[in-house]
Image: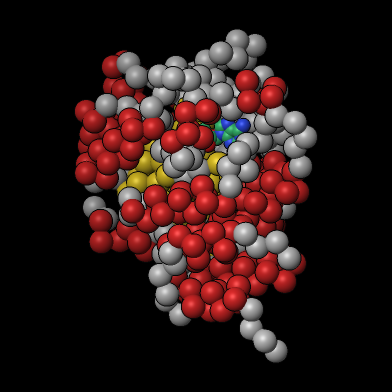
Length: 364
Ligand code: 5AD
Ligand code: SF4
């Protein structure tokens, strides 16, 4: 059988070739069923080789939906005045952390909209310390709390957090500018990522796929951005229009199957290019198909963030339409996850922080 250029490129990647921009564009442009199945199979082999068939869990605690930002795509943007705002109490957050410990998840993610005041910074630092204490250091703590000052990042690191997620959304400055109000700056985000790395965090970033006017070249540039910044973790998901946002209102027809496929291609090509990083199979994938997260794992992702938030808070953290699990509690989320992961023949890495092999030399 004649080998296609596409197949040869996948083989070269598996044999260790460095993928350049034009290679990434070619790989991201897979369209035929043959190309797609070869791509996902190659990415899965790369994943098994570098991070194994073990799913790393991070219990996700959505501590507050208050946000000072007004990103044009996001359902919890400041301008969405129809949304009831909440902040979990300290006790609720600690209860969710205890539950993660009881479930043996190994680590938690504290996620919220952005708030840059001193009171918030101190309150979060206190909670990080309490989670460290109640778990005897067993729970790894990841933060996903947006852009902050270097001092605040340092304060939270000293309190015991060791990983930080801050998505860039898109590395294309024009797309970034279209998706955000004029006072949201890409350069500021890049500075935050640099600060986080210098302080000693394992740093995660990511983008949305399927954005209006985004093409394969933009996505290839995103992957090159990840490589240039030597990130440890990637969280990517399909853009899903939310009707209470400016971008959601403008958006024409939305095709969930196409959006899911686009996100899977991006996960696969990122795995082939970056090899030993952690890549999340995000909830947004599950919003597009009931088995979306499993499809993400089969395309090269290795991290899942099961929701630990109390069921009562979940609807208020709707970043996009159709966010799944809104009527579940944490136990139900766990049971559904265990079943789904067993179905695809993978194991769960219980009781471990689950750092990416990529970050091991930087480990504290
Ligand atoms: N569709 C998909 N993901 C979204 N996010 C925000 N709004 C949407 C949306 N409409 C993601 C962004 C952000 C994270 C908090 O949620 O990538 O970084
Ligand atoms: Fe706030 Fe993040 Fe949503 Fe932007 S994407 S409005 S920063 S929660």
